[in-house]
Length: 389
Image (tube, rainbow, N blue to C red):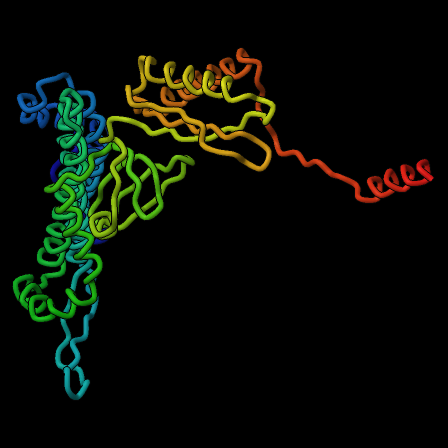
């Protein structure tokens, strides 16, 4: 049996009991860290269970498990190290602001430095947990938004997520300054207020883009998923952020357009149109007579107007005389706006036009030239004159 005198023995400034407490707390904390983290995650989920209304506990635990484990690790290390005393002191010199001479010598122990370091790490892990909770809330809201027909909420949730995470980061920054570095936060904020005009001028463009994002959410010229065209860029809106809007172009590249440009420029929301316009011309050969041309034009016009996926005001007409073809122009509107379906309908009509032209014993023209040789014509005249003589 170990008596009390054994635990009271001092080695390197600490008793044996303090070393046992240090090792015991550290060992227990490392062994049960993951188990305790899971229990804390599930316990914390009970606060959001009624909000989620679905089985999102696995997602919640998955998001919070890592930051809670880090929090438990720092807390365990802090509690175990605090069982030991740290007699060493670090001399901190305080210099006079004017003459630069030493005013006083402030002793700071290693224990105080360790306390500051772990306080810094623990506060960081706490705000990490808060950020993950915001991620979970946005995950649930996005799930609920996917169940509605409106796309406005799908666009609003990511924006609010970024907004609240930015606010939490600022609060965390000032919390670290106040508790760890003992900065007078109120004085600091007052100082920032004095220099607010200079900061506003320097960040003028960023503020304009931020206001542009609020304008987009209020006026709703488009929502996520809409096909838009702005400043020559055409694509699908994927995300509206604080500063810019991300557009997946038709070439599958990602274009980033400042929000100010999205509201100041001419924006065309092609998802709101109810028809897609098709207009083109083709030429048939000059050997085609007028009656056949009229018949081809009438058949094309009738087919387009009777088509189930086009409007009833489509038209085809004999446009004019080209250099090497008789030109026919076709105009119609497709009622299905989905791009792939639109291409399929356009292809179907093109094949039908080819069939109509061929069925009427005509053909498509292509650029040709007819050359007449003056030399050959002159030779023929000379031969004729010689024969007469």
